[in-house]
Image (tube, rainbow, N blue to C red; front, side):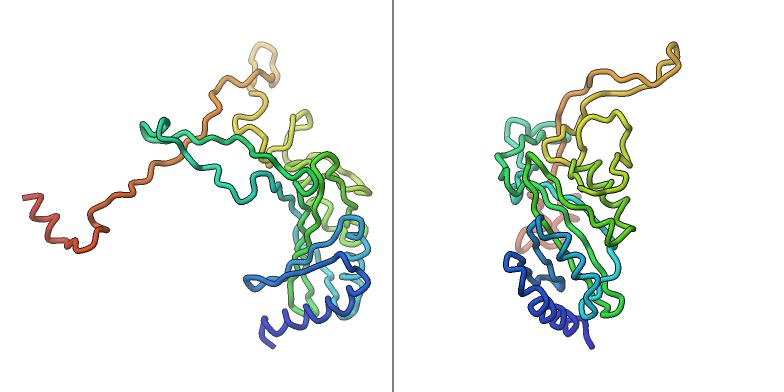
Length: 234
């Protein structure tokens, strides 16, 4: 059975076994199926995906967060005034965001029995990005959820040990949020006199450099031939 056939079987199974969950929807694109679930139904749907003998998603191979602030907009647009030197300054101001669907928790599931993958996504609001933990279903998701909490500030209710996993215990903010400054909140260095690491205000300028791209080149013009460059060099 080809992978496309397995995806067909997956969609048929989802339609049959999720008929009681009217707010769940899925789409198939680029060889993947993405299931969107309301956060109040996430735990029951996830348990169904694992325990149902037909679906049988016995592994949660990843959990990550997504910040949809400024989704679909380029943060690398530059102005002519900044077009100087070896780089161009980009404006990284975060555009107005949807407070009800700013964040998403995304789960990647694997069914070894059916040899197929499924992406599950649930949207969270900006003020209280909280969703139930799937650790009671897949114990291996514990570290993944801690990382999403650390980087995005997404909280997982019922997690047995929800604390930072990559940043310092006293770290301020969540680095993967779109409104987190690239220069950070504080600077840290080792002070030889105090014999400890100390925190200080940020001293560098908040600026994003975009590499200059040469968009005009005679070699890409219609009718250009390599001999013309050799003749010009003579």
